[in-house]
Length: 308
Image 1 (tube, rainbow, N blue to C red):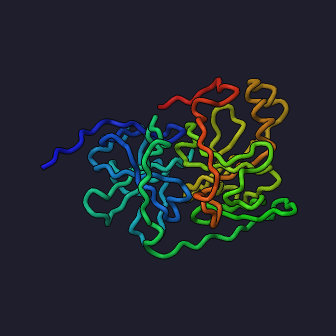
Image 2: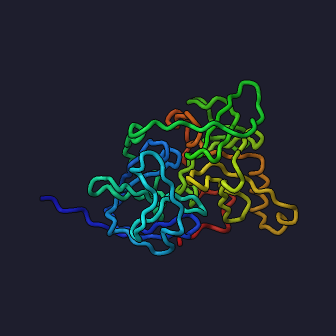
Image 3: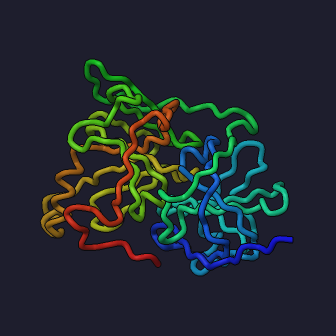
C-alpha cells in the first residue's frame, strides 16, 4: 500500500479579483490539456481536486457566469457552495467546470491557470482527446465586414464558442515559417497576470487588418491597470478574443502617466488577436515565443498586479 502524496494549499482567483478561492492539492507538476472545442479556445489546463478540498474565500458562485453546451454532461453551474460557476463575468478568467456524470475523483475540474504564482510554462501538459467525445463542433461564420487586404495575404476567421462574437483577420499565411506581423511582430505566449490566467497566444496584426463583430451588449471588455487596453471576450461563453486599444481623448491621455501615454501610442497601431480562437489554425506549427511579461516588461510597469 502506497501513501498518498501530501497536499498543500494553493490560492487562486480570477484576474479582477472578484472571485478568490483556496484548494488543497498535491504539488502541481502537471495538468490535463484538453483539445475539445471550448478548452482549446480558452487554453484551459485542468487538475481534479476533491470538492471538499475547495473553499471559496471571496465572491460566490451566483456572481459568476455559467455556460452549458454539448450533451449536457458538462455543466458549468451547480447550486452548491463547493462548486463555483465556470468563469468570471468581469474578466473572463476560467475557474472551474462540473462533470456531474464523471467517475469518482473526476467530478470537479479546476483550471490551474487561475492559481496564483504557478509557473504555467514549466508544467507538464498531459494531452486529453476531448475533441473525440460527443458531436463534432462546427465553427461559426464571421458576421461582420472584411478587414483590409494586401497582396499575398490570407483571410482568417474565428469566434467565441457560442458564436455571439466573431472576428476576421487578414495576414500573411500562418504556418511554420510565419513569425508575425509588422511593428510588434512575433507570436507570443506571455506569463503576465492576465495572459497566464486567460491563456492567450497573441498575434499582433495592424489594427486595420482586424474586424471584431457582434452586438455591443454581448462583447465583454476587461479594462485594468492604466486603462488603455480592453481585453475583449464573449459575455455568454467567456472565450477571450482580442486586445483592443481604447479610444481616449487628448484630455484623458494628458491626465495619464507618461508610461501609459507611451503604451497607448504604441498599441493603437495594432489589434492583437488570440490565436487560440482562429478557426483551423494548428498552434503546434507556429513559432510561438514564450515571454516573461510578468517580470521583463520594458519600460518597467509602475503599477504592477497584486494577487488578492
